[in-house]
Structures are given as C-alpha cells and as structure tokens.
Length: 310
Image 1 (tube, one colour):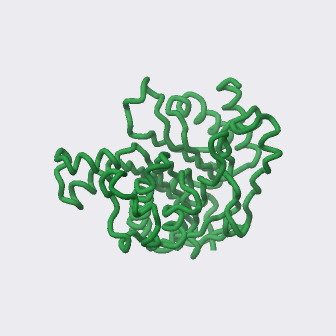
Image 2 (tube, rainbow, N blue to C red):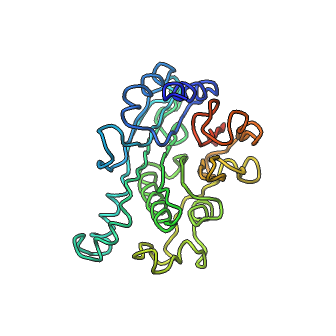
Image 3 (tube, rainbow, N blue to C red):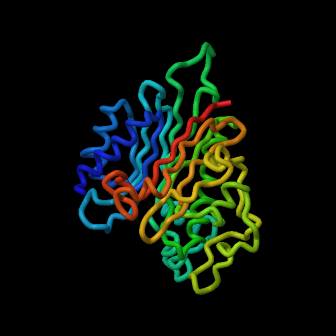
C-alpha cells in the first residue's frame, strides 16, 4: 500500500461521513502542508495544525502533530490556541516547584516530562447566527484536540499531561464564558482502566490507583498529591454515554487491540445524539490480520458523533 493510496483512503473516509469538525493526530508536518490541507480545503474545510515540539527527529517536516478542521459553511474561527506540554513542564519546574531546570532534580523532572506532545484549542462560532444581538456561548463551541505520550510504562506522565491540559482548559474556557460548550478529542494512549480515564470521567483519581503509585523505579515523582489531581469540568465520554460502555477497541494492531481514543464533552451544555458503531473484527480483518490495511489506512478507527448544543 503506497503512501498516496493511504492518504486517499483517509480522505475518502472523512468525506464519506460528511463531518462538520475533524480532529486528527499523527499528521506529519510536510504531509499537512503538501497534501492534507489542500485536500480538506477542496472538500469545504478550513483548518489549523500544531506540530510536536521535538526537532531532532530527522529531516525537516517529518515531525508529526495534530490537525483540526471545520466546515467553512458551518463555522467561523473565533480563536485558536495551542499547548506545548514541554513548555508547561518548564513552568512546573521553575515557577511551581521553584527548581533550577539545570539542577540535578530539575533536569531529571524535565527529562521525564518533556515528551514533545501538544494540544490544539479552537473556539468556533456557528456561521448561521440567530437573531440575538450579541455573541454568546450558545452560538460557540470550544474544541480541544490532543495526542498524549504513548509509552505504556509511563502512566504518570500521561496523567500529568491530562491534568495540565484540563487546567489550561479551565483557564481558557472560564475566561471567555462559564457556559462555553467544550469537546476534548484525541488519542489519549490510555485505556478505560487508567487514571487518565478516571480523571476525565470522575474529576478525580482514586488514591490507590497504580498509575499514581508508580514507585521509585519509574524516575522522579512528577505528580502532585493525589487529592490535588482534580478539575472542575463535568465531562462525559460520547461512546460510553450513547452505547452504555466504551467500544472493545479503537486501536487494532497485531501488538495491541483496545481503546485509546475518546471524544469527551461538557455534559451541562452538550448532548451526544449518536455514536457511529465501531466495525466488528470480521470487517476489520477482511483485508488483513490487523490495521492498517488496504481498506483502513490508519491503525486507529474513526469515531463519529452527532452533538447537540443544549
């Protein structure tokens, strides 16, 4: 399967379902600039891109990142903002912990937390305004798109990233409107039994969760006291809300089959009306033992939902 065919397959998948908002992860920078943006623009979308912060990955443009698109006839972009977790780690070490980043302790913490992951935030406004005389949160929605650290042996780093993403979103959303609808989409590299899932779904983490008790062998402790691992967002998972549970898998490879990807929504002002079923294993393995295949060009399965602002 050539890269061009893979690209065409992914574009076909997206266009066929006719979405209004699209969140993509692992988009290579040069592919976005040379192929993806043009193809999506031709299909009626506008978009923004945020590359991971790491530069030492080979040739220029080969670093991947997150891409977020919206249908031009449906939304106008009001605001765009990006988060670099490396920058938040620097702030944590210097401002919060009061450490010199060049000291042994400071460098050790920075080394553990600086994994180059990023997130995107946009505020979109409905293009078809009602008769209201001024903008308000009911005409707007905030979308966050992220891709967390992938290493399964570092659940504490993923939890730290999630906590700080939620804190940044608290500041971002509350400074604009306390009723701004919010969706957080992405590859969280975390299964439903993880502390990351707990924090997103329950606003807190159980003190006995193994992800917050990783021991000395996992390097320096980067997490605050478990009682401070909390946030104020009231979030639901789209698939769990609509189907009653998370799907069996969103990532289907030879090495791993399970749920890593989620669409989270603010329950006080958004309602999921549907969630597209995840294809069964008989469908996914029709053209190979695992993904990607000639039919599905990504090893992650597209998640799709109709959302209502309430």
